[in-house]
Image (cartoon, rainbow, N blue to C red; front, side):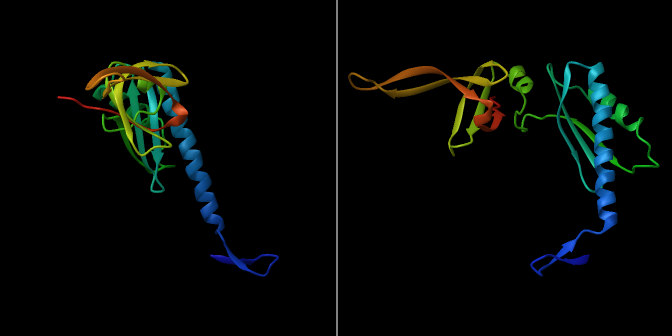
Length: 182
C-alpha cells in the first residue's frame, strides 16, 4: 500500500493500481454473467432470477425461481447457458445454479404470488415480532395476509375468533418465509 498525505497532513492508504484493475475485471465478469442469465431467462419466461452472487474468488452462485417451481433440468439448462458462453481462458470460475429453497426468504412479487394460499411468516422492519398468516393476495406494492386469532369478547366473558386481512407494503417487510406445515 502506498501512503498519500491529505491537506490536513494525515496519511491515508491508497489502493494499488492492480487492485483497481481486478475490481473492474470482476465488474465486467458480473456484467457478462448477468447478460447471459438474462438471455437464458428470455427463452424461459416462467423462470426468474432471485439472486446472483460472485465472490472475489470468482465463485458464481445463481439462485432461480419459477412460477411453477424449478426443476433440475431448469438448473442444468441455465448452467449450460452460462458456462458454454464464457471463455475459461479469460475467467476461471466455479458455477452453482440452484432453485430458491423453502428456507430462503421471499423477495420478489413473483415469489409471493406463487405462494398465495400458503402460510407465511413476516418480520416487519420496525418490529421484533413475527406475523404469521395465510397469503391471500399480492400486487406490485403489497401483500395481504389473512390473520386468525382469538381476542377477549367486547361484551361478556370469554374469547372470540377473529379473522382479519392485513395489507403489508413490500417496503415494510424485513423478511418473509413460507411456513412448512406437516
